[in-house]
Image 1 (cartoon, rainbow, N blue to C red):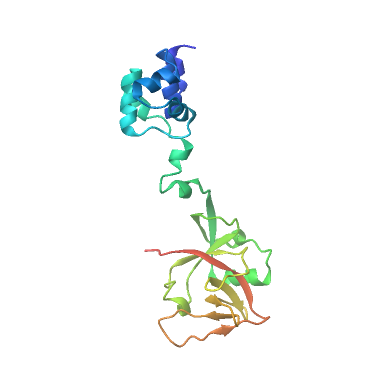
Image 2 (image 1 turned 30 degrees about the vertical axis):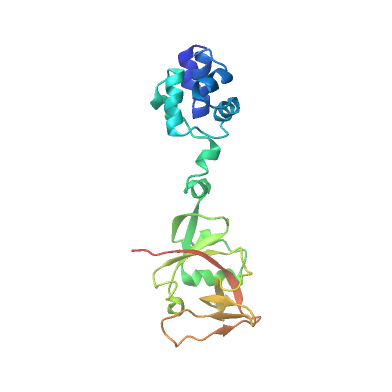
Length: 219
């Protein structure tokens, strides 16, 4: 394999350092002495444990007689990429969550095996952990301080055991309501700008459909 082909195959910063070093006929120890660093530092860069900083990349380019832009354009190591603020978010898989009507959501309280995809009126891409989610446009003024009318609320319908303070969608006498769950005694509290909505105390006739995971304000 030619040097050009080897360089073309070197995709990460570490691989490019290693290829350039070998092409120059230097050992890791030789390169370390030129840069004034330890041999393990060179090994860590080449293995992708972490990447050299920009100033060190410039010194590496000079020592290896390689273009700085070529070295810097290599893929970053996994460890370095994970330090980016968006790394965890970008690793999450995107799910296409069905958007259903508020009334259709109540059907899930009757039949827990019902598939929201069969009721879908639209879809929205979401990055979240649960595989069982659907979205509903908010129509309940009893929680307008948290979820304004028209906001899209994504419900995790695999979660029927909310923690204290979590908003959950429940079916009360066949009607869906979104309320804040409170324990001791178990109850559903409104979060409204109006005082006409009362707390609903839990009983066997009330079924929790799922818990709110996020909301999106549509403008």
